[in-house]
Image (cartoon, rainbow over all chains, first blue to last red):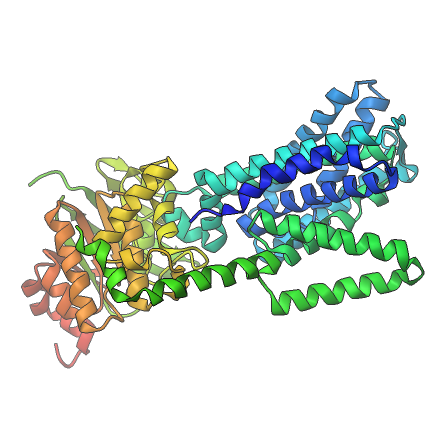
Length: 327
Length: 241
């Protein structure tokens, strides 16, 4: 029953660790670092969207909270990066706790609208406050070491993947979340507390997002409300997860890689047609929602398991009966 | 008589101006099957929802095993030993039948492996073993109702609320479900059944409680209830009584 694709995890991780030794081109390393970041953001988004059934259009706010927390602690309080970064995750988690109390009572479109509105409020706050630098944003000390950020991003995302794999695919927690997604009333009758589980999922989704925001801030050395608190992070993560396959951990990885590769290639070779990028992206999403609602990975996996059951049927009724006869 | 496992004390439930259940009281003894009868809209399902914690009673109390459980949330009651099914079945459609039961098994077996082992036992008892790996959405109505019972049983309840688990089944399937219910009674489970099919409910219940327009109009054995003029009136109209 378990997904065997996890066995690819270790070899892929080893290749990724060895990669900077092969790639000397800093631009290319930078592109891969960003791709890894998007994988992390898409994974975290999927905890709530795919597993729990709540589309969080305020996902980007946690990214921004992590980025600003790290930046403010480093610049105003003169904390070292190693301490400021975890605080980014902690504050994103606290933010999720506060935002979740009112919003997790809502469902479907109402939850999406409420989280979107909250994230707009957070962006406005960053625009008017002094400590965040208002619309001018914040500049961080530059630490020009592409390898360092590559490995840091890789470590954060690999740890996120491992944690989510354990919690969502191995421990009971993942199945409980899916029960809430499928029918929260039915889940309640089975002894599950939906409010508690949804809150745990929300925090689990927010903390890695906040940490990634912190890494991003120090890496890019400049953050402003438009780049870290805009709609971009939520929208992009949503598109990646839907295209790759919601409710799985492999789907967001595939979706993030393909969408990010498309975006990067487009901007590299067709930057004169920027408008076209959004149009094509929109069309791809509309088509994938209509024709492959389970996303790329969901559809592939569905086809594979269907093949398996058909093979089972071919074994004939005798094979099917034997286990019950044995008892 | 032994101490009742469940006491329903003058329970009233209003929705705005509508009184769905009005001052209903009855006791359930351990090991009994109580049938809850009544025409459409009599308040049976509402009373079910009050007992299982989905609604808090507007007034009155529910005492389960000597403790007041009125208004306690369903997940707490599941832990105390109350299992229920839903009239409109609630399978986790996107998950497999086995996963559905595993989720219910987590209550008593928090470890994944133990829960899975327990779930296979439940599948066997409810005759769903060969459907374990199909998605719950692809089950027939009969299968879904069995799954519904299976999930309630996976909670290892001492008190089971069954809401129309036979309605909509063909006679063979219905007989199988009745067999299962009687088997559970033999194991000592206390059961409250809501059912429309008279043949079934008259046969399996030790005692019946009849509701009409939210009020209790009769209580007693099948024979007693069937003779009660108020019951006849509720079902057949005034002229017949």
